[in-house]
Image (tube, rainbow, N blue to C red; front, side, top):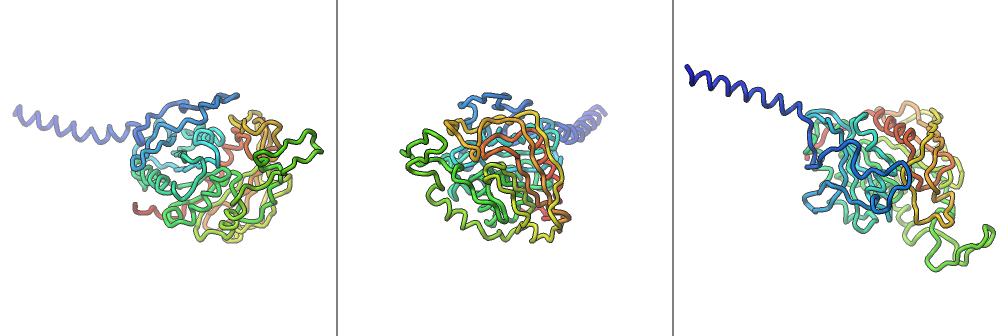
Length: 357
């Protein structure tokens, strides 16, 4: 009788363990979740050593670090949106993480955000296995059935890299959306002004606004070829949002024509709202502020963003343009426009089934 009672108690305990485990917060990739997120910039004067940090997560196949932010109370089986965020050329993962601070909204909107780094500071196909391994790791840890949508987010050359990635078999089978932060638009865009590009090394600086330098600024070698290679729309299905600063397009409006809106038989583009931010973003490019340019960007500051969306796109896709007025390429995004971009991303309907890994 005593032996039977012990077995009954043991069996009851085993039945409770799975239920208890399911209620415990899920830890991803061995990264301890913290609130507020670690290595977060202060409201102003973000230290240089902080923005070059590489992250606490490790991609096991390559041994390369990355940042992984997720809700600290994430439960097993909970549905999330997964975002892979790519920094621009010459930048770092933690600069990107604070430039577009998705981590500030990870709990509210149930986001899992991976922000990687490339050791050359310029993305290339040599990084593809590293990026694919990160995606596979998150799918495995979260459970592919629990990922409501997978978005690529890329700033500048990180956006151009996103454009290249969605043309590869691995990503075009998985990606549900691409948010381009000044990283190219699927459709016509005004040309970048000359002041967007850095002055070539050794060029004399202008002493007055009217005095041209001996070597005017212009696109770096290979820039035009890289843009031309990505000009044709990708053969993939995903929602697309383009965000840019007004000044980096030479203060010209974004054309209403959109290759992606045409693909999904969207209606006319509509000015949805203006987003007013009273707080600035966290980061900027401190290396190009003497004297700096409107097109490249100055110090972060409050502002207004105009939000445009194409109506009633087929299959529940989202196609939108967002313009931050009075801003250039590198001022960190403000809190309200960051949240609005997240809302746009989450408003798209996921269409593809979960893929096998």
